[in-house]
Amino acid sequence: HRHRPLVLSSDRGRGKSAALGLAAAQLLTEGKQTILLTAPSLAVTETVFEHASRLLPQATLSRALISIGDAEIRFIAPDILVESEQKADLLMIDEAAAIPASMLEKLLQKYSRIVFATTLHGYEGTGQGFTVRFQQLLDRHTPNWHSYQMETPIRWIENDQLEAFSFQALLLDAVPAEDELISDAQVDSVNFELIDRQQLVNDEQSLRELFGLMVLAHYRTRPSDLQMMLDREDINVYAMRYQGHIIASAWLVKEGGLGDDLANAIYAGERRLKGHLLPQSLLAHAGIANAGSISYQRIIRIAVHPAVQQRGLGKAMLKQIVSLQSKSDTDLIGTSFGANKDLLAFWNQSGFTPVRLGIHQDNVSGNHAVMLLRQTSSAGQKVLNDAVLRLQQQWPHLLHTNFKQLEPELVVSLSQLIPQQQLQLSQWDLSDVQAFCYAQRGYEFCQVALWYFLKSKISGTTYLKLTSEQQNLCVMVILQQREWSDIATHLSYSGKAKIITALRNAIKLLLTK
Image (cartoon, rainbow, N blue to C red; front, side, top):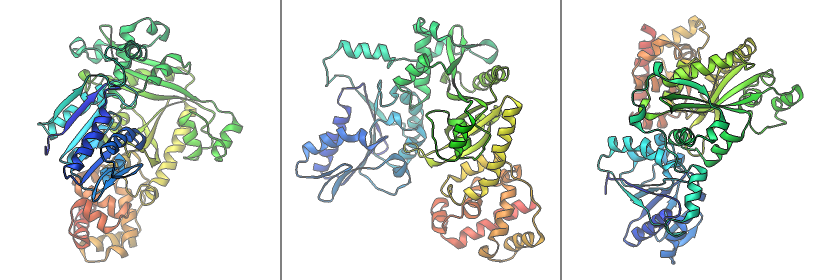
């Protein structure tokens, strides 16, 4: 039904993907023309295509497409599908738990008939966390959504002992503390601690609460993360407790301390290490030649229980971690994540500064990874200053090359955190900007002056006084230099003339503020 999406869930081995394939094939035989299929990767959909093809023996089959006449079942990767204009009678999303909720929300708004399928407990993603995170979006956009859970195993007998053992051994069914047990937690009523992992192994309640919290918060949590947390000596696990229950946690891994020869080889592009993300990125990508020798702590996981979020607990935990690391041999604390406005604001409020935005997009979420650092020593401060300066110099130029298609809202958020040097416009440039706004001087003859003008304005508070549409317009036209047709489509303008008129009004406001 239109705007009544179905959420199909099951544990592993219940035939969920097979059911999608059989249903898709049946819909084609009933006259539907286009069934779109998306998932974290094409490999995930092999079972769907296999079972669909069994019901359509006369169809033409390739790795990502089944076609019969004009009808088809087609796979499209999530990030491409979000940006495409492809129409569909039905969209099927397999292993939806492994796709970020922000991307699922865009697809929910884009397509009127959708099936979201997810594994509740398994390697493909964290279905329980998906249910909690995504249910709010479904309630808001499509309150008539419905769900169906498949319970009977297909691959093995019911109540199989090996399945029960794997659930227990790998904590596939781990859940965080019950909401009612922790609902009164506040910053002044919690305890902060460095987890003793040897004790944790013998404390099943804490182990399940800790891992269950990460499963709920991070859509890519895997059983291998449990092994990493318990076995690796270079990882520290911090937690906040309320009345004995874990309500927040952060995992940190030690990086850096690279020898000069190795650091030089990484800087030159001749070596690449497993791990050591922060120093390697600063050396190889940002070009900070002295970044290898100092010591880092990278925050690889952080989560606060949903029942106690928006109470300052995450910031309080980070403050405690920074305080402890400042008394150690650590020079810089850092993190890296898929960039979005809310997360940038959270980390910035905790004193972390962006130093790099990854060029390549995540193949599932479509996000660029942003790296932020906070110094805990004078040596760390020097590397941080160099990295910030390098990003300041490169950022305006990257916006019309590598980041030409970056969401303009994200460009504004990052630009606000990357202050630009306040250069005095030449009289020629100022005259060009004024003539563009108050007369009819053409954009093409003023675009360099407008670029210098906006480059100095976008990091200031006055820029935020423009409407969201005006902010996005200035970014897309002047800084990203997108095609006029792209801008018109994105911002719903009828053509270039309307865009120029709106741009004149926006720049006029910046001149007068």
